[in-house]
Figure 1 (cartoon, rainbow, N blue to C red):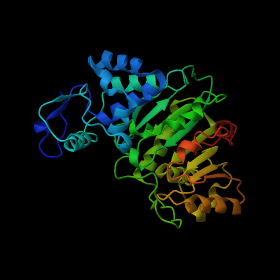
Figure 2 (cartoon, rainbow, N blue to C red):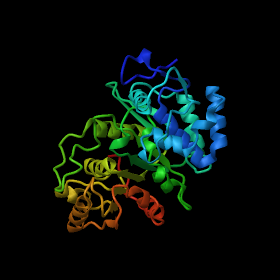
Figure 3 (cartoon, one colour):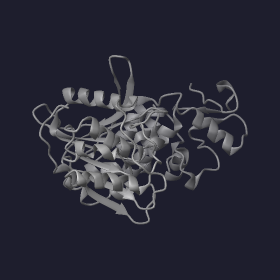
Figure 4 (cartoon, rainbow, N blue to C red):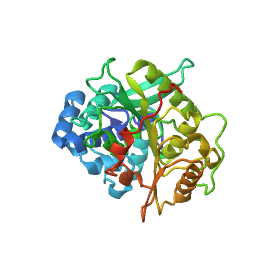
Length: 361
């Protein structure tokens, strides 16, 4: 049995024990994804068949899942009783902290996570599978990947890389898909079968070593961050092992991932065929390196976390260097510009029509 690490005492004294999973937040996120795609009853059936939990219904609603992944709009009055056995009365806040303390300490059972992720994307040409990349030095990078069901060595497919924001860092291997709107790129009518990959940056690390709140652009570090280095190594590995079309590699990211998108482009200027940075920024002085890459940049005009000037300035620098980036700024929209960006009707078709000269680097 897995125990929840108590924020107020030793692990063994926690009044709540997780009866079926070790990472509640990852579970509820995957469960919400499943509910969104196939409905509550089907998701409950998956829960019950794998965990043997006969009372799963009480923790499958969007209300519960939002609350337990940190969305303060709709916090529950008590933990979902289907998932936890109560060992004594305790205020809501202490229970919440106790559960949150366990998130980075343990791993969600692969069987349950895989089943829920697959259910979440059923019928959408997306079949997410959690994996972990490990390099020769033993360094690890969790990621989820979707490969077309009919994929074969005789065919090649576009690759879409998604870089998450700062709030989804960790090692659970699923929180990077919290903002699932990016899947619209794959599920939109007319989108071709594609390989989708979303890595997860570790706590305390970044895709790009920059100050997200800075108004002025900062110089790109000579060496990539650990997370970016592992991402580039993972891409090399996927190129060797999967039927990826080298002329149709794409990258997108939001917030911290928006900065990471520009960072990856600058470290491999001829690798990606197109990019979609959302509420990010870059080293404007290096714009000429990537001016040839087709880009559609998005930002919210009212973003107080990453100022719009960061996207505005790199777009201006790209144009000055001869590039032709598209730029969309949403009036009145704050930091969450990705919901609007990934819902842009023209974006999927625009992205997949971009092609680059084949290059391994």
